[in-house]
Image 1 (cartoon, rainbow over the protein chains, first blue to last red):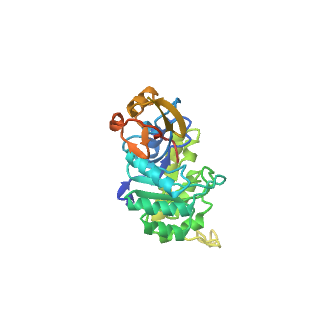
Image 2: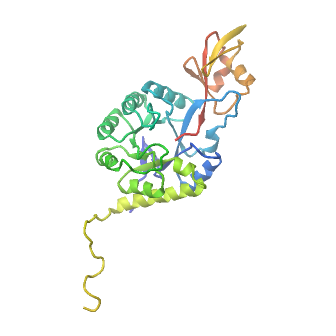
Image 3: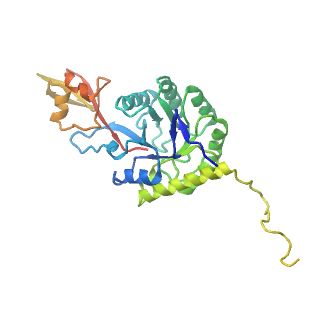
Length: 256
Length: 67
């Protein structure tokens, strides 16, 4: 069966794996990982430079054909997120923006209310808005109505590698939203990425699990395969689960 | 003339100059440097046309790794 490309904000992506640029021990892993994984979209963050320090340009490590997804990390309010988004676009990073607003510094949970407010403002300014949220169906519908190009529910806390702890809540969003659903945060293993795709997620975003692997290039490839396996399984429509055994071989004795 | 400007949240005294001179003097020239002057983004091509004044606020930013 031929799959359709992932479309976000009118842009087509061949790969359903989005990746992040944080936590790489050496930035030169990034282009190698991108080549091995086929990921076509990558997040970046915006920060004050270290005056007098060595300021490496992360954009130097990302090939031009990879779409940049600046995030608004560091924002505590909708207004701060809006400011970061405008700066990123002015700086030539395009119109994609991942809204990430965090006020809870212990669990790093996104602030859904501020995120909705920022989405409303930025969608009106023709940004392609990808809000990162706690999976809440009511909120997801409001984000969709506000003009979000996708919703990004978290699987488990950022960087935790604990996988799909919010699976049943994400399932509601997948079932009821028209915009693409991208599972972001907490995916620690390729099998967890596959699990998200099997349940019908449109894409996953992985950073920590790839960047902190001993070999990020191989791990990028592994995640790419996990995402593809899960996607194809979803398209193939899996058989149903059963509480009882259902024999795959004839139940008669060998020579009966 | 010496002026006081706020650069990345810190007050600094410096001789009045244009943005491009300040950036060059500090050795900050970088392809990814993003400059916000009093809340407005200034493109690299326009740095030389911006003269810093008293109490100006500069944010010097760049893109870094993030998820």
